[in-house]
Each structure stands twice: as structure tokens, then as C-alpha cells.
Amino acid sequence: MSRVLVFGAGYLGRRLSRDLPNAVSSAADIADAPAVKTALAEHRPDVVVNAAGKTGKPNVDWCETHQSETYRSNVIGPLTLADACAAHGVHLVHLGSGCIFYGPSPSAGGFREDDFANPISFYSRTKYAADLVLSKLAHVAIARLRMPIDATPHPRNLITKLAGYPVVVDVENSATVVQDLVTAVARMVEVKPSGVFHVVNPGILRHRDLIALYRELVDPGHQAELVPAGDLLKRGLIQAARSNCLLASDRLADIGVQLRPMDVALRDAMEHYAQASE
Image 1 (cartoon, one colour):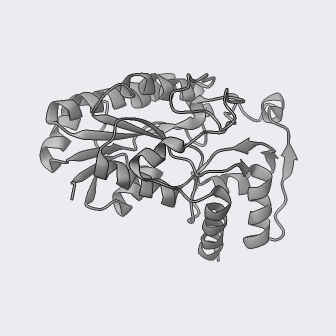
Image 2 (tube, helix red, strand yellow; image 1 turned 90 degrees about the vertical axis):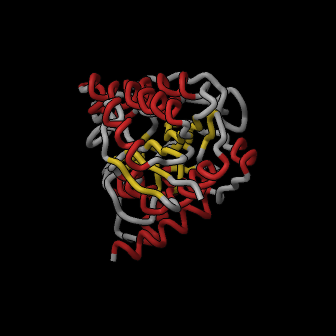
């Protein structure tokens, strides 16, 4: 069984280090080459999973005003880590973001892994900048996810986020249920593929459907105003335009991964979320 070292002590980093077989975590700064080298020498992993990076608190608007920190974590860090992994003969699984795509896709099934992105926010630009290099390295696999949905309440959980907003955009998106992300990353650890994989649950996530399911299973009295895409920016409630897009995840089949349909996975997550909220 492969020894796995997970970088990143945030929401997904903690989850992956807990749930991946034979995994340990490191809080080392991935942009600090000596610190990364020390961590690799100490743990001697077969595979590194990079869940480190800046997404901004409370949201990606933070990245617009903290560009140096964001660039260092999301661009310099992954490239430093990839360089160290190459030197040590270690495979790297890097968590990317589907938020690099904006608007309708050129194909009916959603944006594909090799489509050129059109990032707008500074956060999405940094994620794509790293992808452009990492996607061409033989010892790197990129797991692109979108808007994590989880069974446990957490500020980074899309359920918690949308339930906390009095105003929600009425849009369609692809999203990733965290339980299924763990399944996909575990498979990548096992087979060590190269290139980009869209790790999103098949199907469309409509924000109105998530809110309706939240009202059905968690809080019958919950209220939220649904508004068109772009309305939050016009109202000055956000600083940077948000990505709303659909991603094709067909390439996961190449490594033997079939994620649950979005409607099935969302209901399962929401049922457990309701239990955890009691």
C-alpha cells in the first residue's frame, strides 16, 4: 500500500489525511523548498496529495486584496512541491479548481479537462496558472473539484454556505461531494495517473434545489431570496464575479472511477447533514 503524505491543514486537507488509507499530514509551507524537502525526507511517501492553498476568508474576494499571499500559495507552492516530488521520485496528486471556467462550455456535456479556461477572479487565475504547468508533468495528476458538499456542517461546505446567505444566486453548476472526492483521490493514489481529471458528481446542481432540499430535511422554516446570476455583483455584495459552469467528468472512467449522480449524492449528504445538525 502506498504511503501518502497530505500537505494542507485546511478543510479538505484534514479530511483527506483522515480518510485516505495509510495517510499522514504535514503543515509545512509548500512554497518553502527546504521545508518541503524536510517533510519528504521525514515521511518518505510514495504519493503526495496537495490540498494546500489560499481560497480566501470568508470567500475568494479576500484573494483580490491579498494577491501576493494568494499567488505564493496557489502558484509558487504547487510548483515548488512538484519540483521536490520529481527530485524524490514521488507522484503528486494536486487539488485543482473547476472555478477556472466561466459561463457556457463549448460542448454540450460541459467543460472538458483539455479545454482552455477563461478565469476572471484573481483566485481562479492563480489556480489556472499552476494547472498550465502541472498538467504537462508526467508525475502529476490534477483533481479539479467544484464547490465541495459534505455531510458535516463546516464553513467551507456549500450546504453551510448557501444556508447562511439571505440572498442566493439561482444558477446551475457542477459540484463535488467530498465523500466521492476521497474515493477518486484514493484511486489516483493507487494508479498514479497523469494529467487533469474533473472530480465532480455527474449531473447538474441547481442552487434552488439545494435550498429546497435543505428546507425539506434540515430546516423547514428556512428562507432565502433567489436572484439571477450577476445580481450579487451589481448589488455590491461581492467584489469578483463568481464562476458558474458545468464540467464533464468522463475521464474518471479511464482510471476506473464512477462517482454517484449528483441528485443521489446530494440527498445522501443532506440527510447526514441534518442528523449532524440536530
